[in-house]
Image (tube, rainbow, N blue to C red; front, side):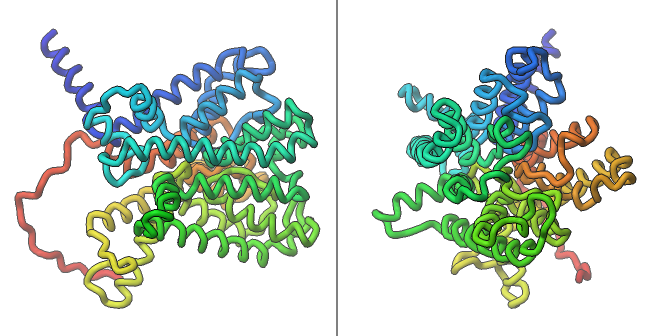
Length: 467
Protein backbone atom coordinates (compact mmCIF):
# COMPACT_ATOMS: atom_id res chain seq x y z
CA UNK A 1 0.00 0.00 0.00
CA UNK A 2 2.86 2.37 0.83
CA UNK A 3 4.51 1.58 -2.51
CA UNK A 4 1.24 2.24 -4.37
CA UNK A 5 0.71 5.46 -2.45
CA UNK A 6 4.26 6.51 -3.20
CA UNK A 7 3.79 5.84 -6.92
CA UNK A 8 0.45 7.69 -6.94
CA UNK A 9 1.90 10.72 -5.17
CA UNK A 10 4.86 10.70 -7.59
CA UNK A 11 2.45 10.60 -10.56
CA UNK A 12 0.32 13.44 -9.17
CA UNK A 13 3.44 15.48 -8.46
CA UNK A 14 4.65 14.81 -12.01
CA UNK A 15 1.30 15.87 -13.48
CA UNK A 16 1.50 19.33 -11.91
CA UNK A 17 5.28 19.74 -11.87
CA UNK A 18 5.45 22.08 -14.88
CA UNK A 19 3.28 24.94 -16.11
CA UNK A 20 3.29 23.48 -19.64
CA UNK A 21 1.94 20.20 -18.29
CA UNK A 22 -0.82 21.97 -16.37
CA UNK A 23 -1.86 23.87 -19.53
CA UNK A 24 -2.11 20.61 -21.47
CA UNK A 25 -4.12 19.00 -18.67
CA UNK A 26 -6.51 21.97 -18.54
CA UNK A 27 -7.33 21.56 -22.23
CA UNK A 28 -7.75 17.79 -21.83
CA UNK A 29 -10.15 18.36 -18.93
CA UNK A 30 -12.28 20.81 -20.93
CA UNK A 31 -12.25 18.40 -23.91
CA UNK A 32 -13.55 15.61 -21.68
CA UNK A 33 -16.41 17.71 -20.29
CA UNK A 34 -17.29 19.13 -23.71
CA UNK A 35 -17.38 15.70 -25.33
CA UNK A 36 -19.74 14.37 -22.66
CA UNK A 37 -22.07 17.37 -23.05
CA UNK A 38 -22.18 17.19 -26.86
CA UNK A 39 -22.86 13.45 -26.73
CA UNK A 40 -26.09 14.11 -24.84
CA UNK A 41 -29.27 13.69 -26.93
CA UNK A 42 -30.29 17.20 -25.82
CA UNK A 43 -27.40 18.63 -27.88
CA UNK A 44 -28.54 17.06 -31.18
CA UNK A 45 -31.47 18.18 -33.31
CA UNK A 46 -32.23 14.54 -34.09
CA UNK A 47 -32.81 13.80 -30.41
CA UNK A 48 -30.15 11.07 -30.56
CA UNK A 49 -26.53 11.18 -29.49
CA UNK A 50 -24.13 12.22 -32.25
CA UNK A 51 -21.64 9.60 -31.08
CA UNK A 52 -18.17 9.69 -29.60
CA UNK A 53 -16.18 10.59 -32.74
CA UNK A 54 -18.37 13.53 -33.83
CA UNK A 55 -18.64 14.83 -30.25
CA UNK A 56 -14.90 14.57 -29.58
CA UNK A 57 -13.96 16.05 -32.98
CA UNK A 58 -16.32 19.01 -32.48
CA UNK A 59 -15.15 19.58 -28.90
CA UNK A 60 -11.45 19.54 -29.77
CA UNK A 61 -12.11 21.80 -32.76
CA UNK A 62 -13.90 24.24 -30.41
CA UNK A 63 -11.40 24.26 -27.53
CA UNK A 64 -8.49 24.39 -29.97
CA UNK A 65 -10.38 27.16 -31.85
CA UNK A 66 -9.81 25.34 -35.13
CA UNK A 67 -13.12 25.41 -36.99
CA UNK A 68 -12.88 22.10 -38.83
CA UNK A 69 -16.29 20.43 -38.55
CA UNK A 70 -17.80 17.05 -39.28
CA UNK A 71 -21.33 18.29 -38.57
CA UNK A 72 -22.89 21.59 -39.64
CA UNK A 73 -23.27 23.67 -36.48
CA UNK A 74 -26.54 25.39 -37.37
CA UNK A 75 -28.46 22.35 -38.61
CA UNK A 76 -27.04 19.59 -36.41
CA UNK A 77 -27.13 21.09 -32.90
CA UNK A 78 -29.90 22.39 -30.66
CA UNK A 79 -29.75 25.67 -28.76
CA UNK A 80 -28.17 23.74 -25.88
CA UNK A 81 -25.56 22.24 -28.20
CA UNK A 82 -24.77 25.63 -29.72
CA UNK A 83 -24.38 27.17 -26.25
CA UNK A 84 -21.94 24.39 -25.32
CA UNK A 85 -20.00 25.03 -28.54
CA UNK A 86 -19.70 28.79 -28.04
CA UNK A 87 -18.71 28.28 -24.38
CA UNK A 88 -15.99 25.84 -25.46
CA UNK A 89 -14.78 28.34 -28.08
CA UNK A 90 -14.54 31.13 -25.49
CA UNK A 91 -12.70 28.88 -23.03
CA UNK A 92 -10.40 27.61 -25.74
CA UNK A 93 -9.66 31.10 -27.04
CA UNK A 94 -8.76 32.55 -23.67
CA UNK A 95 -7.42 29.40 -22.06
CA UNK A 96 -8.93 27.68 -19.03
CA UNK A 97 -6.00 28.66 -16.80
CA UNK A 98 -6.39 32.34 -17.74
CA UNK A 99 -10.13 32.32 -17.02
CA UNK A 100 -9.69 30.47 -13.73
CA UNK A 101 -7.00 32.89 -12.55
CA UNK A 102 -9.21 35.84 -13.44
CA UNK A 103 -12.09 34.59 -11.30
CA UNK A 104 -9.73 33.84 -8.41
CA UNK A 105 -8.55 37.46 -8.61
CA UNK A 106 -12.14 38.66 -8.92
CA UNK A 107 -13.01 36.84 -5.70
CA UNK A 108 -10.07 38.64 -4.04
CA UNK A 109 -8.43 35.34 -3.12
CA UNK A 110 -4.67 34.96 -2.95
CA UNK A 111 -3.11 33.64 -6.16
CA UNK A 112 -0.15 31.41 -5.38
CA UNK A 113 3.22 31.61 -7.07
CA UNK A 114 2.69 28.35 -8.91
CA UNK A 115 -0.71 29.46 -10.25
CA UNK A 116 0.86 32.72 -11.42
CA UNK A 117 3.61 30.88 -13.31
CA UNK A 118 1.09 28.56 -15.01
CA UNK A 119 -1.22 31.42 -15.98
CA UNK A 120 1.74 33.47 -17.23
CA UNK A 121 2.62 30.62 -19.61
CA UNK A 122 -0.99 30.27 -20.72
CA UNK A 123 -1.50 33.99 -21.38
CA UNK A 124 1.86 34.65 -23.02
CA UNK A 125 2.98 37.01 -20.28
CA UNK A 126 6.68 37.82 -19.91
CA UNK A 127 6.48 37.94 -16.10
CA UNK A 128 4.15 36.45 -13.54
CA UNK A 129 4.51 39.64 -11.48
CA UNK A 130 2.41 41.58 -14.01
CA UNK A 131 -0.09 38.74 -14.32
CA UNK A 132 -3.06 40.07 -12.27
CA UNK A 133 -3.22 43.28 -14.27
CA UNK A 134 -2.67 41.42 -17.55
CA UNK A 135 -5.47 38.94 -16.81
CA UNK A 136 -7.88 41.80 -16.11
CA UNK A 137 -6.86 43.55 -19.32
CA UNK A 138 -7.29 40.30 -21.27
CA UNK A 139 -10.85 39.85 -20.03
CA UNK A 140 -11.71 43.51 -20.54
CA UNK A 141 -10.17 43.61 -24.03
CA UNK A 142 -12.06 40.44 -24.97
CA UNK A 143 -15.36 41.83 -23.71
CA UNK A 144 -14.95 45.20 -25.46
CA UNK A 145 -13.83 43.79 -28.82
CA UNK A 146 -16.42 41.00 -28.91
CA UNK A 147 -19.23 43.38 -27.91
CA UNK A 148 -18.15 45.90 -30.55
CA UNK A 149 -18.07 43.15 -33.17
CA UNK A 150 -21.50 41.95 -32.02
CA UNK A 151 -23.04 45.41 -32.45
CA UNK A 152 -21.56 45.89 -35.93
CA UNK A 153 -22.59 42.43 -37.12
CA UNK A 154 -26.06 42.83 -35.60
CA UNK A 155 -26.69 45.86 -37.84
CA UNK A 156 -26.27 43.50 -40.80
CA UNK A 157 -27.75 40.23 -39.56
CA UNK A 158 -30.90 41.60 -37.91
CA UNK A 159 -32.30 43.11 -41.16
CA UNK A 160 -31.46 39.84 -42.94
CA UNK A 161 -32.65 37.25 -40.41
CA UNK A 162 -34.86 39.10 -37.92
CA UNK A 163 -34.20 40.15 -34.33
CA UNK A 164 -33.91 36.78 -32.62
CA UNK A 165 -31.90 34.93 -35.26
CA UNK A 166 -29.90 38.02 -36.25
CA UNK A 167 -28.75 38.79 -32.72
CA UNK A 168 -27.90 35.13 -32.11
CA UNK A 169 -25.81 34.95 -35.31
CA UNK A 170 -24.06 38.24 -34.49
CA UNK A 171 -23.16 37.17 -30.95
CA UNK A 172 -22.01 33.72 -32.04
CA UNK A 173 -19.92 35.04 -34.92
CA UNK A 174 -18.35 37.85 -32.86
CA UNK A 175 -17.05 35.37 -30.26
CA UNK A 176 -16.06 32.79 -32.88
CA UNK A 177 -14.19 35.36 -35.01
CA UNK A 178 -12.31 37.00 -32.13
CA UNK A 179 -11.30 33.57 -30.82
CA UNK A 180 -10.21 32.63 -34.36
CA UNK A 181 -12.53 29.61 -34.24
CA UNK A 182 -14.37 29.79 -37.58
CA UNK A 183 -17.67 28.27 -36.41
CA UNK A 184 -20.84 29.97 -37.69
CA UNK A 185 -24.63 29.62 -37.76
CA UNK A 186 -25.16 30.10 -41.51
CA UNK A 187 -25.91 26.46 -42.33
CA UNK A 188 -29.69 26.81 -42.08
CA UNK A 189 -29.70 30.13 -43.97
CA UNK A 190 -27.27 29.87 -46.88
CA UNK A 191 -26.62 26.12 -47.01
CA UNK A 192 -24.70 23.62 -44.91
CA UNK A 193 -20.96 24.31 -44.53
CA UNK A 194 -21.39 27.50 -46.60
CA UNK A 195 -19.62 29.77 -44.06
CA UNK A 196 -19.53 33.33 -45.48
CA UNK A 197 -19.54 32.48 -49.19
CA UNK A 198 -22.97 34.13 -49.57
CA UNK A 199 -21.87 37.41 -47.98
CA UNK A 200 -19.25 38.78 -50.36
CA UNK A 201 -21.80 41.43 -51.30
CA UNK A 202 -21.94 42.57 -47.66
CA UNK A 203 -18.55 44.24 -47.09
CA UNK A 204 -19.44 45.27 -43.51
CA UNK A 205 -19.87 41.60 -42.52
CA UNK A 206 -16.66 40.50 -44.27
CA UNK A 207 -14.49 43.39 -43.01
CA UNK A 208 -15.91 43.31 -39.45
CA UNK A 209 -15.24 39.57 -39.22
CA UNK A 210 -11.73 40.07 -40.60
CA UNK A 211 -11.01 42.82 -38.05
CA UNK A 212 -12.18 40.55 -35.21
CA UNK A 213 -9.87 37.80 -36.50
CA UNK A 214 -6.90 40.20 -36.64
CA UNK A 215 -7.64 41.51 -33.14
CA UNK A 216 -7.73 38.00 -31.70
CA UNK A 217 -4.64 36.93 -33.63
CA UNK A 218 -2.34 39.74 -32.49
CA UNK A 219 -2.07 38.54 -28.90
CA UNK A 220 -3.15 40.04 -25.60
CA UNK A 221 0.23 41.42 -24.59
CA UNK A 222 0.30 43.33 -27.88
CA UNK A 223 -3.10 44.84 -27.18
CA UNK A 224 -1.99 45.85 -23.71
CA UNK A 225 1.02 47.62 -25.25
CA UNK A 226 -1.23 49.35 -27.78
CA UNK A 227 -3.62 50.56 -25.06
CA UNK A 228 -0.74 51.83 -22.89
CA UNK A 229 1.09 53.45 -25.82
CA UNK A 230 -0.68 56.77 -25.17
CA UNK A 231 1.06 56.92 -21.77
CA UNK A 232 4.38 55.23 -22.44
CA UNK A 233 4.91 56.10 -26.12
CA UNK A 234 6.77 52.79 -26.33
CA UNK A 235 6.08 49.34 -27.69
CA UNK A 236 7.93 46.20 -26.64
CA UNK A 237 9.98 44.41 -29.28
CA UNK A 238 7.48 41.54 -29.24
CA UNK A 239 4.60 43.93 -30.07
CA UNK A 240 6.56 45.63 -32.84
CA UNK A 241 7.39 42.30 -34.45
CA UNK A 242 3.79 41.04 -34.10
CA UNK A 243 2.32 44.15 -35.72
CA UNK A 244 4.96 44.28 -38.48
CA UNK A 245 4.75 40.59 -39.41
CA UNK A 246 0.94 40.59 -39.28
CA UNK A 247 0.84 43.55 -41.65
CA UNK A 248 3.36 42.01 -44.05
CA UNK A 249 1.58 38.65 -44.17
CA UNK A 250 -1.88 40.17 -44.64
CA UNK A 251 -0.83 42.64 -47.34
CA UNK A 252 1.40 40.10 -49.08
CA UNK A 253 -1.29 37.43 -48.96
CA UNK A 254 -3.95 39.81 -50.27
CA UNK A 255 -1.84 40.87 -53.26
CA UNK A 256 -0.95 37.27 -54.05
CA UNK A 257 -4.57 36.06 -54.02
CA UNK A 258 -5.68 38.99 -56.16
CA UNK A 259 -3.07 38.12 -58.79
CA UNK A 260 -3.39 34.34 -58.52
CA UNK A 261 -7.17 33.92 -58.20
CA UNK A 262 -8.43 36.86 -60.29
CA UNK A 263 -9.18 34.64 -63.29
CA UNK A 264 -10.39 31.61 -61.29
CA UNK A 265 -13.95 30.95 -62.48
CA UNK A 266 -14.57 27.75 -60.56
CA UNK A 267 -17.65 27.37 -58.37
CA UNK A 268 -17.68 30.11 -55.67
CA UNK A 269 -14.16 31.16 -56.68
CA UNK A 270 -12.72 34.67 -56.61
CA UNK A 271 -13.01 35.15 -60.37
CA UNK A 272 -16.80 34.66 -60.30
CA UNK A 273 -17.34 37.67 -58.01
CA UNK A 274 -18.04 41.21 -59.24
CA UNK A 275 -14.82 43.17 -59.69
CA UNK A 276 -15.39 45.40 -56.64
CA UNK A 277 -15.83 42.35 -54.38
CA UNK A 278 -12.62 40.56 -55.41
CA UNK A 279 -10.09 42.69 -53.45
CA UNK A 280 -12.25 42.35 -50.32
CA UNK A 281 -12.52 38.58 -50.80
CA UNK A 282 -8.74 38.34 -51.36
CA UNK A 283 -8.13 40.38 -48.20
CA UNK A 284 -10.48 38.12 -46.22
CA UNK A 285 -8.80 35.00 -47.62
CA UNK A 286 -5.41 36.30 -46.50
CA UNK A 287 -6.75 37.11 -43.02
CA UNK A 288 -8.77 33.95 -42.42
CA UNK A 289 -5.83 31.68 -43.27
CA UNK A 290 -4.07 33.13 -40.23
CA UNK A 291 -6.00 30.58 -38.06
CA UNK A 292 -9.60 31.80 -38.38
CA UNK A 293 -11.54 29.18 -40.35
CA UNK A 294 -14.22 31.30 -42.04
CA UNK A 295 -14.19 31.39 -45.82
CA UNK A 296 -15.87 33.57 -48.43
CA UNK A 297 -14.60 31.56 -51.43
CA UNK A 298 -14.58 27.83 -52.06
CA UNK A 299 -11.24 26.45 -50.85
CA UNK A 300 -11.57 23.29 -52.94
CA UNK A 301 -11.45 25.30 -56.16
CA UNK A 302 -8.35 27.35 -55.37
CA UNK A 303 -5.54 27.06 -57.90
CA UNK A 304 -2.66 24.79 -56.83
CA UNK A 305 -0.27 27.70 -56.26
CA UNK A 306 -2.86 29.39 -54.05
CA UNK A 307 -3.20 26.23 -51.97
CA UNK A 308 0.58 26.10 -51.49
CA UNK A 309 0.68 29.71 -50.24
CA UNK A 310 -2.36 28.96 -48.07
CA UNK A 311 -0.48 26.07 -46.45
CA UNK A 312 2.46 28.37 -45.68
CA UNK A 313 0.24 31.05 -44.15
CA UNK A 314 -1.64 28.48 -42.06
CA UNK A 315 1.61 26.95 -40.85
CA UNK A 316 2.95 30.35 -39.70
CA UNK A 317 -0.29 31.19 -37.91
CA UNK A 318 -1.04 34.06 -35.54
CA UNK A 319 0.74 35.89 -32.72
CA UNK A 320 2.09 34.32 -29.55
CA UNK A 321 -0.24 34.57 -26.56
CA UNK A 322 -3.18 35.04 -28.93
CA UNK A 323 -6.31 33.04 -29.68
CA UNK A 324 -4.70 31.60 -32.82
CA UNK A 325 -2.41 28.69 -33.61
CA UNK A 326 0.45 27.77 -35.95
CA UNK A 327 4.13 28.08 -35.13
CA UNK A 328 3.43 31.81 -34.45
CA UNK A 329 4.67 34.85 -36.33
CA UNK A 330 7.33 35.66 -33.71
CA UNK A 331 8.85 32.20 -34.20
CA UNK A 332 8.89 32.75 -37.95
CA UNK A 333 10.40 36.22 -37.51
CA UNK A 334 13.23 34.94 -35.30
CA UNK A 335 14.12 32.29 -37.88
CA UNK A 336 14.09 34.88 -40.70
CA UNK A 337 16.34 37.22 -38.71
CA UNK A 338 18.64 34.26 -37.94
CA UNK A 339 18.99 33.57 -41.67
CA UNK A 340 19.72 37.23 -42.40
CA UNK A 341 22.28 37.41 -39.58
CA UNK A 342 24.03 34.29 -40.89
CA UNK A 343 24.11 35.66 -44.45
CA UNK A 344 25.68 38.88 -43.17
CA UNK A 345 28.26 36.88 -41.21
CA UNK A 346 27.20 38.14 -37.78
CA UNK A 347 28.28 36.13 -34.77
CA UNK A 348 24.94 36.65 -33.03
CA UNK A 349 21.32 36.93 -34.15
CA UNK A 350 20.05 40.49 -33.80
CA UNK A 351 16.53 41.81 -34.19
CA UNK A 352 16.00 45.58 -34.29
CA UNK A 353 19.13 46.26 -32.20
CA UNK A 354 18.30 43.46 -29.75
CA UNK A 355 20.30 40.24 -29.41
CA UNK A 356 18.27 37.05 -29.63
CA UNK A 357 19.43 34.60 -26.90
CA UNK A 358 20.55 31.18 -28.09
CA UNK A 359 17.92 29.56 -25.88
CA UNK A 360 15.17 31.49 -27.69
CA UNK A 361 16.61 30.62 -31.10
CA UNK A 362 16.81 26.92 -30.16
CA UNK A 363 13.18 26.98 -29.04
CA UNK A 364 12.13 28.65 -32.30
CA UNK A 365 13.96 25.97 -34.31
CA UNK A 366 12.38 23.24 -32.17
CA UNK A 367 8.88 24.64 -32.66
CA UNK A 368 9.42 25.00 -36.41
CA UNK A 369 10.63 21.45 -36.98
CA UNK A 370 8.16 19.82 -34.59
CA UNK A 371 5.34 21.71 -36.31
CA UNK A 372 6.64 20.75 -39.74
CA UNK A 373 6.93 17.11 -38.66
CA UNK A 374 3.35 17.11 -37.34
CA UNK A 375 1.95 18.71 -40.49
CA UNK A 376 3.84 16.48 -42.95
CA UNK A 377 3.31 13.38 -40.82
CA UNK A 378 -0.44 13.99 -40.67
CA UNK A 379 -0.68 14.60 -44.43
CA UNK A 380 1.15 11.34 -45.13
CA UNK A 381 -1.03 9.44 -42.65
CA UNK A 382 -4.14 10.92 -44.26
CA UNK A 383 -2.90 9.81 -47.68
CA UNK A 384 -3.03 6.20 -46.42
CA UNK A 385 -6.40 6.66 -44.71
CA UNK A 386 -7.89 8.32 -47.81
CA UNK A 387 -6.18 6.09 -50.36
CA UNK A 388 -9.42 5.15 -52.14
CA UNK A 389 -10.51 8.79 -52.43
CA UNK A 390 -7.13 9.70 -53.92
CA UNK A 391 -7.42 6.87 -56.47
CA UNK A 392 -10.95 8.03 -57.34
CA UNK A 393 -9.54 11.57 -57.85
CA UNK A 394 -12.01 13.11 -55.38
CA UNK A 395 -9.11 15.25 -54.19
CA UNK A 396 -5.32 15.42 -54.48
CA UNK A 397 -2.48 15.00 -51.97
CA UNK A 398 -2.16 18.79 -51.89
CA UNK A 399 -5.69 18.90 -50.45
CA UNK A 400 -4.61 16.54 -47.65
CA UNK A 401 -1.55 18.71 -46.98
CA UNK A 402 -3.96 21.67 -46.90
CA UNK A 403 -6.13 19.77 -44.38
CA UNK A 404 -3.11 18.91 -42.23
CA UNK A 405 -1.92 22.53 -42.20
CA UNK A 406 -5.44 23.67 -41.33
CA UNK A 407 -5.59 21.23 -38.42
CA UNK A 408 -2.14 22.01 -37.01
CA UNK A 409 -2.52 25.76 -37.57
CA UNK A 410 -5.99 25.59 -35.93
CA UNK A 411 -7.37 27.34 -39.02
CA UNK A 412 -10.48 25.38 -39.93
CA UNK A 413 -10.72 25.82 -43.70
CA UNK A 414 -10.77 22.70 -45.85
CA UNK A 415 -10.26 21.83 -49.49
CA UNK A 416 -10.76 18.08 -48.97
CA UNK A 417 -14.21 18.44 -47.32
CA UNK A 418 -13.63 17.23 -43.74
CA UNK A 419 -17.08 15.59 -43.27
CA UNK A 420 -16.35 13.35 -46.28
CA UNK A 421 -13.12 11.99 -44.87
CA UNK A 422 -13.07 8.48 -43.47
CA UNK A 423 -13.52 7.99 -39.73
CA UNK A 424 -9.86 6.98 -39.51
CA UNK A 425 -8.86 10.25 -41.17
CA UNK A 426 -11.02 12.25 -38.76
CA UNK A 427 -9.48 10.45 -35.78
CA UNK A 428 -6.03 11.39 -37.09
CA UNK A 429 -6.93 15.07 -37.29
CA UNK A 430 -8.01 15.33 -33.63
CA UNK A 431 -4.51 15.09 -32.01
CA UNK A 432 -3.10 17.45 -34.66
CA UNK A 433 -5.64 20.13 -33.67
CA UNK A 434 -4.78 19.62 -30.02
CA UNK A 435 -1.03 19.89 -30.62
CA UNK A 436 -1.55 22.96 -32.76
CA UNK A 437 -3.39 24.75 -29.97
CA UNK A 438 -1.21 23.91 -26.96
CA UNK A 439 1.93 24.15 -29.07
CA UNK A 440 4.21 21.25 -30.03
CA UNK A 441 7.05 22.46 -27.83
CA UNK A 442 4.73 22.99 -24.86
CA UNK A 443 3.36 19.48 -25.28
CA UNK A 444 6.86 17.99 -25.55
CA UNK A 445 7.98 19.85 -22.42
CA UNK A 446 4.87 18.68 -20.57
CA UNK A 447 5.80 15.05 -21.25
CA UNK A 448 9.37 15.37 -20.04
CA UNK A 449 9.88 13.22 -16.95
CA UNK A 450 12.76 15.28 -15.55
CA UNK A 451 13.51 18.97 -15.25
CA UNK A 452 16.26 20.51 -17.34
CA UNK A 453 19.64 20.18 -15.64
CA UNK A 454 22.86 22.06 -15.97
CA UNK A 455 25.50 20.19 -17.97
CA UNK A 456 28.36 19.09 -15.72
CA UNK A 457 30.60 18.10 -18.62
CA UNK A 458 32.33 20.44 -21.03
CA UNK A 459 32.43 19.12 -24.58
CA UNK A 460 34.74 20.15 -27.45
CA UNK A 461 33.22 21.99 -30.41
CA UNK A 462 31.94 19.66 -33.13
CA UNK A 463 33.51 19.80 -36.59
CA UNK A 464 30.66 18.94 -38.98
CA UNK A 465 30.35 20.07 -42.58
CA UNK A 466 26.90 21.42 -43.50
CA UNK A 467 25.38 23.16 -46.50
